[in-house]
Length: 135
Image (cartoon, rainbow, N blue to C red):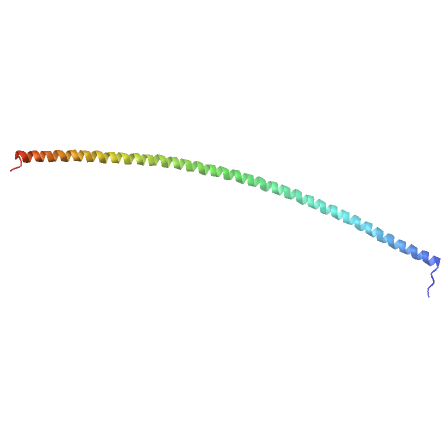
């Protein structure tokens, strides 16, 4: 059987204290390493955020450029439509005037034809009445 003496107890206490000191030292080292790792991760996250912000600003700028180009393009198309409408209005007005002229010509021809027919009929009636057609 083993006998515990003061000397053995002191030796055990010294070894236990040394063991705890090693554990405490390891824990401090681990905390230091974790702090360094967390600082690196925080730095990496800040770097990624900076890159993302720059990327989003670039995308925003590109969207603004695209919107401006689209606005200019739509304005150009609107302008072309206005020009086409103006040309169509001018041409339809010319066609309307041509149609009005043709109607007027047809009406005038109809009146002239009626006057001519009335004249021919009157001349024939006069000739029949005077006997000029009897042969």
